[in-house]
Length: 305
Figure (cartoon, rainbow, N blue to C red):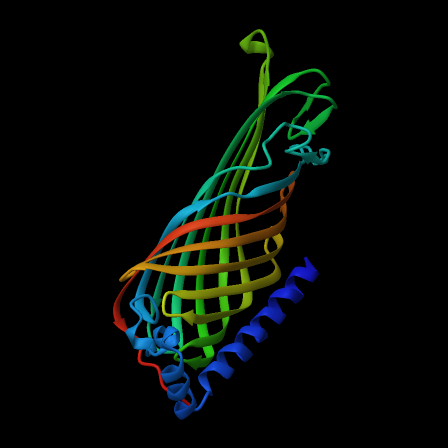
């Protein structure tokens, strides 16, 4: 993860240098080049001419194809700890899944913006256990058939400020929070209802984060966006840490409608310490996203410095 974080930081600065170099080309040189090469005429535009860039409002919705890695440990009501369960290896959960993702952005000024995101993933599995599992108040023996579920919802709210704001590139800082709602459980399947038992564990974890982002106009119909976020905090019964990242490429299809292909990842670790009930939850996912973006409202007024 550290290598990926360093890559994103280098990527931020590369985009900045590339965009700044492009923006600082003298006008007379640009005009001469355009006269000599008509194929570059598509680059002769202002940021305000782009229907997808710098608009007040932006809606995004699409699909996410994450590869998951989940570990859970849940203690019993008498204070005993359970054992660590790998949901993919021990319970037969599929690593690769498909999910919905959505986002909204409101640019309240040239430098400031608010954002909201939503992600939902529900998984279930049934498996004959290859090892004994202690989860909650019960022990699930070897060769027992269990059904398991995991429901995750993530809400994210952010405030972004662009400390560098140019017509064709921006760099800024983010402050926000990932609010995770998780519910996990096991159910022993038996021949009679009296022999069945089940356990579940749910929690809500608000995890703040800080990050960096950059947005660059590459061409009249092309743009890129990247961000990286990290934070760790302990609040009451919740002790958590979070690290997330995103890199996406945008292509403007028609007027205000664009398609985006990206790669997104999130890794979190949450310890929940309740009276007579403790839980450990470690979940990571990463994978490609395909989304559609609709931008509307007035253009933000950019200034050249």
